[in-house]
Image 1 (cartoon, helix red, strand yellow):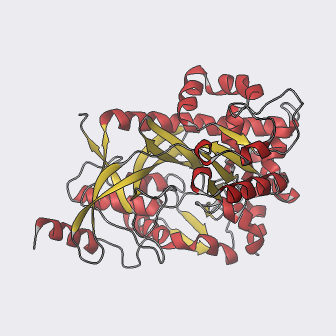
Image 2 (cartoon, helix red, strand yellow):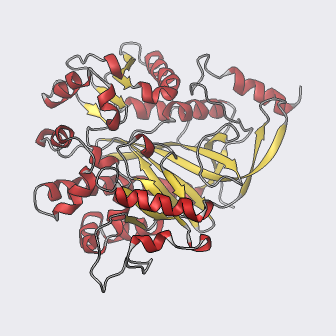
Length: 438
């Protein structure tokens, strides 16, 4: 047996019996995805910047809802959501709560990287934990270390608790089962359970990690018992029940000129400028007519319907569902302007304008991922091959007592011809590993 074949056998033998993703395949690699010291330091610093950014987002929404900032901000973020959910999200007792897991989707570009979005209910925690543990055991220097993902997740439910997962998110149930089993093994005096959101009964003092999207609440008939327990303080839940924090609209709000001084003040000048380098320029696809003399910044057009007429070469743009919709999860609600015919781009623009009040969308600059080579095993033959591909890097940050820790990062390397970078059968999934600066 060759060294590569022996390595593949070792990794496969460590694979959990139940798997990590339901009905999903991916390619394994002999190598972690290499991160040099300089980029590792940048990733460490990014985590705190994003934590401060999310706190600022929370603050801006609260001020808008209370009349201390323009009302249109909260109106954008509340669009299409039921009144009772909006009311719940504004409860004073958890006014300052923000997500304790931060996972940005970074697209690696020739110039560095750009943040495609920030996921507040991210998959991949268990998968990345398993990859880190497995590759560290093989002698690799893994970003975050062998068990940092497991202990990071424990910080969310330090005394045990319930991981409540919906049918909508059931693809990720095996990885949650794995991480709960790891925690029980390491801390046998405590209990972590993975339970169905559809039938969940809260128990006082048993805190909850929420693994369901808030648009899915109508499909969770028992959910109001949990919300009542959270409202009454009997149970704490993370991520918080704050749909406004889970909107891609925040990237558009970050770039709106009248809010510039708010962001400078809340983020600080240094963080504000650093985030400008990596948050892609975005616009709300708001159909409200502009005054005759006004233009949409950077596009220099007067009406969004002019954007619908842009040539394919001019359409380095994306249209994205902002959130609170099944289309807002993964890549389902994304249209790549340069990748679709004119008629389809025009249709997507018109639909975005027509549905802005119920399903808001944003338009965003598209940044092309750089090409690089990475090795993987062929799932059928076991042969090692080199793939030319593009990378989405997902660092996982856990927030504990206001401190942000980078616990690992998952690299998804997709074939070069793919525009949208996400998990697929022919994608390589690998942990990020540390390598010295060149």
